[in-house]
Image (tube, rainbow, N blue to C red; front, side, top):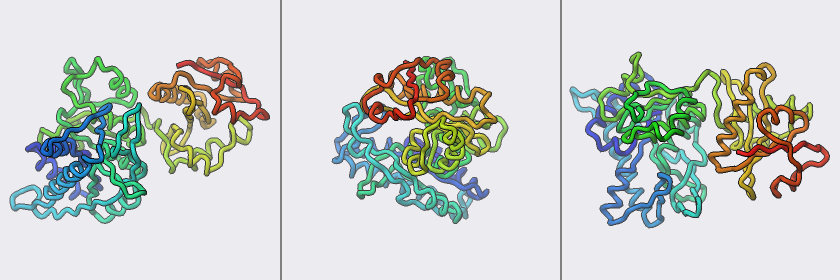
Length: 412
């Protein structure tokens, strides 16, 4: 997976970047390329006397602006196709004959109203047509994707190109994701260069704004972090201004950018539909003992977005879920499970730490958990005993009095 922001397409080095991608393709590397178009959209709107507003870095795509945005994105994709089609003699692209394939591979849904702000035609990824993209790669073509998605009602939405890249990389099982930016590798405000960051180090770095260099473009680091969280083994942040960074990053010992990678070969990531069978195998013994509430495959498929899993060598060895309550700034921690052989290595605590950070990002003030046999462990982790009456109404209505679970709560 290669991600190229729209800003990079306006730089003189873009032809060299495309040439390097062509070299990778000639070596048999299966490639998906996702391009952005933020700069091009700004120019197109400006030429029409229009401007966008932004909310937390996301463009508010007004419906009346959409034709201009589609024109900018379409023009940018044409530029990409032209670059991949060049083949002058005495150039690196001579005789390459690269075939690109694009299509409606991204199903989108509206971003909706966030904190009272209507994002209108700004959308988010709903699903990725994994099979269609893999078929393109199997046919020795490069898949070229634009930051657009299409709804089941036939609408087109403007998407974050970073979200498209991360979602497609995770869905297609990419070995790595390479993300170009203006500044290249990551450094802090003291000029210290970071050649590599584990997920834990990366998360800490992104949380500590005081360490950030003012000129560094951290969208690439955030995208790399999210990709690794979703199961992509490696993310590489490289410069779009310097020639040869792509090949040096991949084929030299020291590389040219910053690599983000999992702390160990155990990966903590958001669950996806392909993980349902593994989660069922993990929790089934605990359900039979009455430790966990039984979940059907259908229920788990519908609720998979709430789950986090711990994976080792493609085997799911732990899981946990966070269900936010609709009527209170709180959530329920549920289905905490670790394979027996791995239960004494602090992995349950790792899962809990991740869930607590997730709850804080959702601005939840407390998390509840209901248990029949493991209350002592939760108390050791900072939970306190409570009662059914303290549960938010939506959860209280579903409480199973026959099961008689203990209610515990932890303030965040």
